[in-house]
Amino acid sequence: MLEKCGINWGDLPHCQVTYIWISPCGKFPKGKTRTLDSEPQSVAGKNSLYTQPQGHGFHSKGFLWITLVPVRMFRDPFTRDPNKLVMCDALDLKTIKFHRRSECAKAMEEVKDQKPWFGFEQEFTLMALDQHPFGWRDDPYPTTPGVGEVGLEKIWGRDVSLSHYQACLYAGVKISGITNEGGPAQWEFQIGPCEGIELGDHAWTARYILFRVCEDFGVIPSFHPKLFDHPLWSSDGHMNFSTEAMRSPGGLTRIHAAIERLAQRHMEHVALYGDEHNNRKRMIGGSLSSAFDTFSWRTASRSVSVRIPGHVHSEGRGYLEDRRPPSDCDPYVVCQALVETCLPPPGGHNGEDAIL
Image 1 (tube, rainbow, N blue to C red):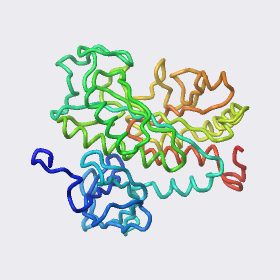
Image 2 (tube, rainbow, N blue to C red):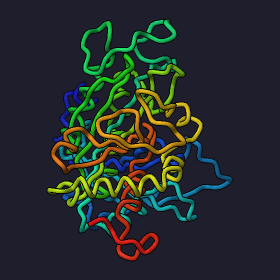
Image 3 (cartoon, rainbow, N blue to C red):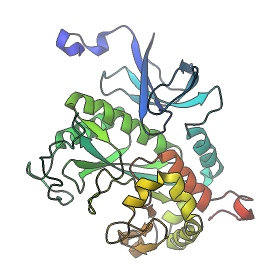
Image 4 (cartoon, one colour):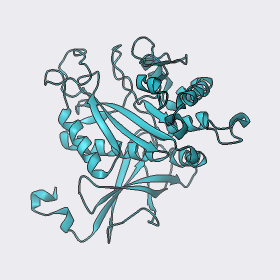
């Protein structure tokens, strides 16, 4: 770090911009830094960057060059002002699709008048370099703590989670909170509320920041939805969703109509959201999760596909919570599926009009 050499990042004559994009497998963020002569004020009109993705499941006999198109800019919490993090859309020159932002952005543009809002609950587990969960002893599975517990005998990795929280706040990521989860080294952060395509940009940038923070602590964040077969342990990526009409008086009727649409495309959605093998192990029904093959919904229940929070039911307006996405889902894919199902544009799916 420059601080160790007595140099401040802000005293350097140039600006460093780290371009962020999604790996070819769609599971991990990647980054590449370049030097600019001055601090960019926005992503508008910024030059694209050409790069070559490798690793994480990418295989090709030749080289695949992609174009990174800047779409959203954040402050860099690691090198600090005036340096930037820039989320990019990745356009590959061989039309091999692995980045879903552009498709999601198109879907959001078609329904922007309905002001779709999203909130994302990202769960993850901290792993040691030996791929053993951080802080765990040799027990097959430690005693499961309750959400919000404190104490070193119950919770591990709080300094990592707090550092990530603070880094996101500095960057301008719309992170709304953190909490420990059901495993001793399992945590959650929440993104939102965000409107339209904004959710995916902020969620992926938060994931990138988490990987970078974990480097400094010597741990690895895992988004695997089912690391262990323990019935009380899974890792989810719940997505909250609403429109302006759902948030307005009488909006509960619109929420019910949206849930009816979601029920009709249940198996299509769970296939989009993640790997079937892992999700069948995660979505086993019971008191903590819904069943993989069966759509269900209820008010204030954890064991359903889609939940209406208790306060939403009481107020008669608000949002719904899609509890089917796993922790390693692509937020762009989930958001796109929700708006295309619940809010088809006029003349859209089966000629149906949107839920206005």
